[in-house]
Length: 433
Ligand code: GAL
Image 1 (tube, rainbow, N blue to C red):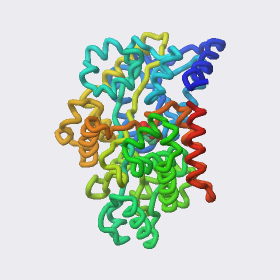
Image 2 (image 1 turned 120 degrees about the horizontal axis):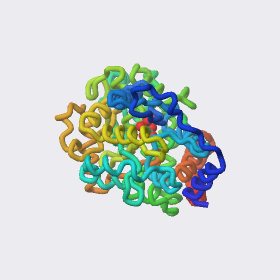
Image 3 (image 1 turned 90 degrees about the vertical axis):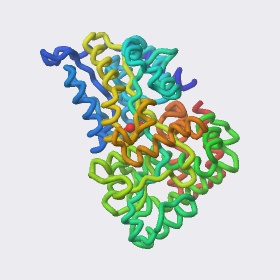
Image 4 (image 1 turned 180 degrees about the horizontal axis):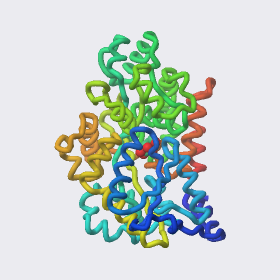
């Protein structure tokens, strides 16, 4: 059974269960309506960003019901969302990404009408790159509003720690990365802050695949799911390098949240972290300045590529008119120029609006965000722009789960063999397709 029919089967059970009434009675008398928003933006920096949206929606007269579900990468939030849908009680709005949006839309639970007028009035089609708008449409209709664009293939560096360890410049090749790791180790620092959760393991895996296999190889293996690319010699080489990268990972990082690992780099205990630019939200929240207190560089060997991760808020069908008005308000706010600026500055991302990406300095974005926007626009022309597998942009959740299992087992098994792991990867992905 493919992923879409799997989700559809689960969801169709919902019709057998009583539909939970929307808690209209809890609305404040003066509220224009209430919208519950399910998301996983719960770290300090992420919360600062989502609070910008909440404040604006409340200012517009709606009641914001916060449906935050902790857990980086969102797999816990997705589990909660599925059980809410099965119980016939989906929230008005939920953070869903990539091909998963289409999968949800195919169950009939997403609203294909509610965003029509806003999208037309606000000219979303011309504001957004086609890659972005295609992600949030189902059969030509918007079923989600894109919020921001994250780059995933970053390396975050504490320059003071580098200096103390005698490292002169950020690594640009895997060999330089290992050399830096060795110096950090020798100087008593954690070389690579890393939380050993499956999505974090796969964030590192895809960066290494990109570095070793290049953009074409990355696309064949992680986007097209080509069996030869998944099991071939290049993948074996990537897995061999991944095992080496793993030797620099934080020994206390097993099961650790990404933001707690980011804090180790911020506080000078660790030298580096491989993480998408939501990591910057933690540096920003700690009042650190890009280019001075920390460095952001593309993961070694990937500077011509940009693995993207677009956060989006999908709209679920609701019976209540106030909720529909609230969903429309959220959508309108989200693509507004001011929100795009303030949210992304807090979140570490870049705007989704094309008109803003071309002139980032004007909006007060820092050097990391300016580089990201430049590389995003360049990557759109050269093909260097590729969807992140680890962040639900390239495949369905079922296929992503297959990657996660093989990669995490490989990292944790001291006897793991790269050639054997590549075979397992091919088999697991083919059966999850
Ligand atoms: C990503 C998400 C980001 C950030 C990160 C850590 O998947 O797109 O917005 O929240 O997870 O939780």
